[in-house]
Image 1 (cartoon, helix red, strand yellow):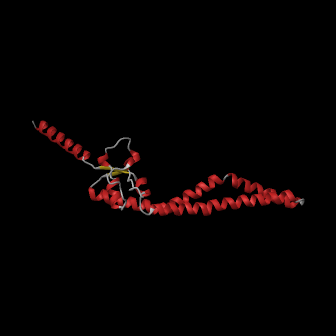
Image 2 (cartoon, one colour):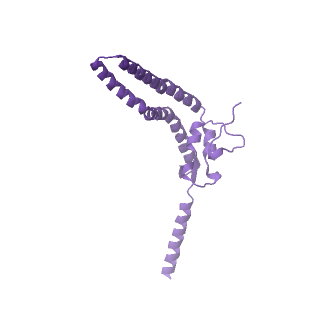
Image 3 (cartoon, rainbow, N blue to C red):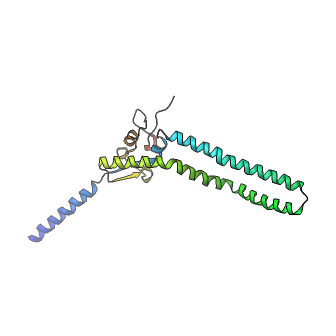
Length: 183
């Protein structure tokens, strides 16, 4: 009889622990949509584009012009030592220009990270505060799910906390925070 009571109690404890484990709140957010719909994101994007135009675009133009000038001088010169130096310089410039897409891409990614990191931090701080306030155990990115119910999407309430204007219907594409169209 004691063994039956012990088994019943043990089974009850297992059931309670399973129920409490299933009671964890899990939500998801579309971090990218929140970041890119922040009011200050448009200014940051404009700053990035201006930097790309001024820095990367200007540097490429300057390097290409330098290459053309040295090539022109090389074709006109007859002094062997000058030709040797110019050929070496042209080879280096040619390699740099050939690798420019990769160099420019890396520089652009670095600048983008530098400019957008404060916005990502702002969004993540809001996500953490909301999750703590509402008792969420886990908050994942939307990309982590293949299928997830809209009721677990925290993007819209977090967007509201961040001051992002959302569609009046309260719906947003891809679970993100859709901005109100500007006229």
